Image (cartoon, rainbow, N blue to C red):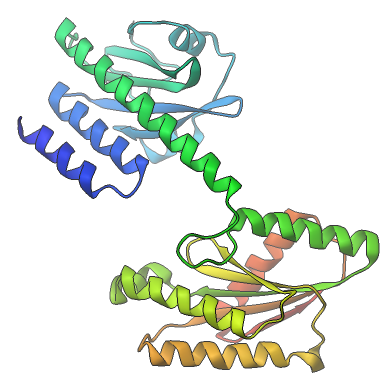
Length: 311
């Protein structure tokens, strides 16, 4: 076992996600085969996009998209063997002299394809190694997709036991529907760590994760049974209040703010928490309301105060 294999093994045991395992696998292939670039392209709905790569620019990764019916890609994914294309310009950035592709398929389920490229012709043993690694990558990608699907079925955030973001979007849609059909206004209370990554580096993941649990526990103890808290992305939470909170009836919010301040003081965490209360009485589309939430929390970040929005 050489140094690259040792690094792959070490990365495998340290990995906390399938993407990190894929990343380690790609590093192994790139170093062992002396590649100028390598990439996994994933089928997402009806388009292929770059999932993970080495040697591609961030601009290329962000903007690459090919339809499922693309003739060159169809040739790759419908093949049962390695396809080698010289001077491939359509799919590969920087155009190495030799480009090699292999489909990523598990039980006839097409998930994408993998590419490697360099300016020196590939030997048969190198292609065989690439093919074996590609098969492993296909199963990792499959496992990742199955995990993602199972998470969508789960409505709870595993770490905090708050509801997760997928369920938040579902319940927010329900609230908007009730507002439109039954004229039932509602409120949202959005709380978010300011400069989250900086705070995480200062206090460490363990203490910040513990603070998340305390936030959820504190909020649950201070809201009604009909109200719910949701994990929102990696650095915030949103509470959906079933009934609209009037300006002169916001005792719940005032109490919550005091209790949350106490949580951070007790944990000895000196961090700014941005807060926004949105009282929703007008009709919105889901994406419009999400944008309004983000605008409100950004305003809280700029002013250092709880922002109250009446819409």
